[in-house]
Every structure is written in structure tokens, then in C-alpha cells.
Length: 217
Image 1 (cartoon, helix red, strand yellow):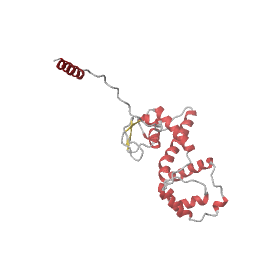
Image 2 (image 1 turned 60 degrees about the vertical axis):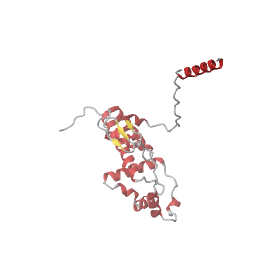
Image 3 (image 1 turned 90 degrees about the vertical axis):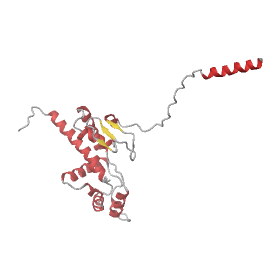
């Protein structure tokens, strides 16, 4: 009889445990690997979750213009030169950033097609001019060449694809073998936007110094 009583007590104790509410355990946070810090320009764009070729789709918070690939140079150019609803302070900020980038940018991206065109233009044997010229160009001279090249293509309506032509590459490398030509996208997007921003900043600086300005009808 005693054994039955003990068994009954153990059963009741076990049942009581089933009704004990255990405290909720805190959810463990997922470990996130530290990544590259995003550019501040993303503060003015909505980033989508999907990524394409390493870039996330983006949408401007001012005008709702969207891009499948959110590239920082393109977004800066949009705020500085294209968006009609952007705040004046933001527009001026990125105008100056692009103008500064124009002075600092001298590199290029060498694609497979461009490398092939350079090989066609220069040939396997090194040119004799390469023995007579410096292997590196002065950064100041590179900057002046970049500006002159951009103005030439824009002012005379030369197709941007010409910059990747093996004949054009051959011409430039004969003139200055150490000058680094850009690819078509860099010339038509990045350099063009930077040059427009630089000119805009210069014009605004000139206008601020003037007095008693008037516009004729």
C-alpha cells in the first residue's frame, strides 16, 4: 500500500512539473561578419535586399528614381546633377565631392577587350618610343590629360566607344606611352559627371563674387 502511495505522489509531482511555465530564453543574435563601411551617399537612397554583381538596387528618396545596380559614383552624380527634388545643401555637397574626385581620379579599369585592343595597337614587340619616355606619368599631367580628353569627346560629339578603338589607343600611346586611357564607361559616366560638377562649382564661385547681376530678356 505504501508503495502505491509513493508511486501516486511521484506521478502527481511529475504532472505538476508539466504545468510549470519556464521563462522565455533570449533569442540569440546572428553573428554578422564585419563588412566594408557604406558610403554616406546611401543615406539618400533606399537599398533593396537583392544584389546584382555585388551591387544592391537603389531608389532615390527625393525623386524615386531607381537603379538595378546602386553604384556610388552614379548615385553621387544623380544627387549633384540630375535630381530636381534634392535639397540644395545636399546638391552642393556632392557637386564639390565630384569636383574633387575629378582632380584625384587618374586610374582606369582594364577589361579583357581593352587589353586585347592595346595588344593589337602596340604589337608584341615594344615600341622604340617606350625606351625614350618615362614609364610613369606625372599625376598633374595625367589630370590635365584627363580633362582635355573629356572636353574633346564632349565638345566635338565623338562617340565614347572611340576611346576603346585600337587605332585611337595606338595614336595616344605614340603621343605619350605612359598615359593611361580610361574605358568607355569611365569616360562617359564618371569623368563626364566629375567635369560637369567641377565646371558648375567654378561658375557658382564666380557668380558669388559678382555684384548687381541682371538677366536680359
